[in-house]
Amino acid sequence: MNCVKCKTKAVIGLPRHNAAFCKPCFNEFVHDQVSRAIKAERMFGRADRILVAVSGGKDSLALWDVLLKLGYHADALYVDLGIPGYSAKSREEVERYADRVAKPCHATLLIHTVQEEEGAGIRELADLINRPTCSACGTIKRYQFNRAAVEQDYDVMATGHNLDDEAARLLGNVLHWQDDYLDKQSPSLPASVEGFAKKVKPLYRLTERELAAYAVLNRIDYIVEECPMAKGSKLLLYKEVLNRLETESPGTKQRFYWGFLEKQAKARPVPTSMAEKDQATLRPCATCGQPTTAETCSYCKMMARAKAGIPR
Ligand code: AMP
Ligand code: FES
Ligand code: ZN
Image 1 (cartoon, rainbow, N blue to C red):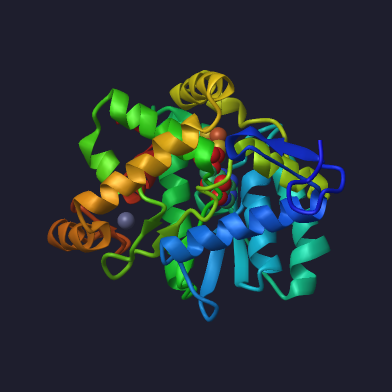
Image 2 (cartoon, helix red, strand yellow):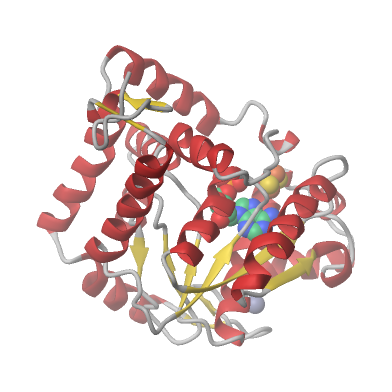
């Protein structure tokens, strides 16, 4: 198998593109897919300051790496959730990458430690308020990502969600006809109101397999294990189903998700209508000031319940 671009020996085959690449041409392919995503969805420009949420996994570390290699001003935020046997290892990978690659590029790593800031690790917090760990974790991460971006004046917040993540999420939203979630499922969400950072997903054109290959080929160490709390999650099941379809019919995932994006773009101009909707429904949280649809935001409600030690 030879590289379709330069005809030297290929290191990876990409059935969905009917292509194979050697290492330099594969890196070029990955960089090109990210650049296309940034341009197509008007994510950010050269002058913007980007905050990448890095988990220690392959996707977000690859994203940080690609943005730095493309010459963007990209800092990163790691949220240490205090999950025994998982967080320490993922933090180590993030810090290792930051020391080895990011700091020499003048990029900064910010760390938010849940144990210190919220007063307990995510599992204890979730137990205190009687909620599944993943749902409490989602609330804290969303809140802290947005807060860091807004308080430290970043123009945009980027996450490492890839094509597999987005296609699986779309499948879940369609299976349950979650109209509100479908409306908001976009690779680029504008800063619709004061206090909300713009959020983007520059990896939506690349698969999990391609990002794992990018990390390995470029010697980016990452935590291979999934978070132990994610076991049995519906999203993993949807990914398995889509992988099965992809094997039988390469390109299924991209046709499914990109097709959705095309239809969504034709149906309505997402940024405008969403911004209008948000402006009509959001107001500052009475406790912290972040935009919310209720009197108090879900993060502040959660923290108040945890402090009082009472279940919902
Ligand atoms: P996940 O929901 O675990 O698939 O993660 C999706 C994206 O959220 C990752 O690609 C990261 O960009 C971000 N992320 C997840 N966990 C963390 C974390 N602990 N700290 C910072 N960013 C994270
Ligand atoms: Fe949030 Fe696992 S990463 S519970
Ligand atoms: Zn609040």
